[in-house]
Length: 235
Ligand code: DC
Image (cartoon, rainbow, N blue to C red; front, side):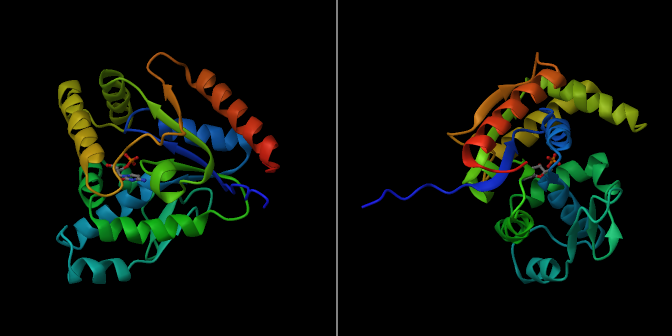
């Protein structure tokens, strides 16, 4: 009897903790390869943002389900609009500091994860894409043809976050507060019951503490091209 060939999703899965540089890496990799970039953190952030405005209690129940059913979420509407909910462009608002903590809380709720799991799966189709998050290689697309887990030390991740906030004009938060935030968020993301942040066994691990962006991109692009060629995937 012929042995069934394993089939792969045309997804480059990039997972890792916040501040590991994975967003910049995923974006740049997608641009270098000329494929769609899908930022799943932006989805959790936008739902958290809208839930906060509508004062939805962040607990499982009918109110949360009604809220989720009322959402029309649109991703990559245009070059300038990353994400829209019910017609409102949230691309910039979701980067505000307070939204990070809300997103971390909301991402623990199974109904929110299920809602976004379906949406995320609906976005990947015939073309190769880069999908970035916490559980892409483990839960969303465990059959991704290429998986990377990007990490870096807590200190360097906090320093990068501080730089980002300063560039956005936020001068209120100290490095110590950010280190504390990063530790808390890691603990929440890694210890939640549903789809915790975890390296998939078959993912390539990359620690970016001492690597430059261009080195990381070179390593990732070479690996993607090798695997794509092997599977006959067109980039
Ligand atoms: O990557 P980010 O910082 O934009 O993500 C915001 C929050 O969303 C983060 O606390 C973890 C959560 N998240 C998740 O649970 N699963 C994903 N696939 C992406 C993000």
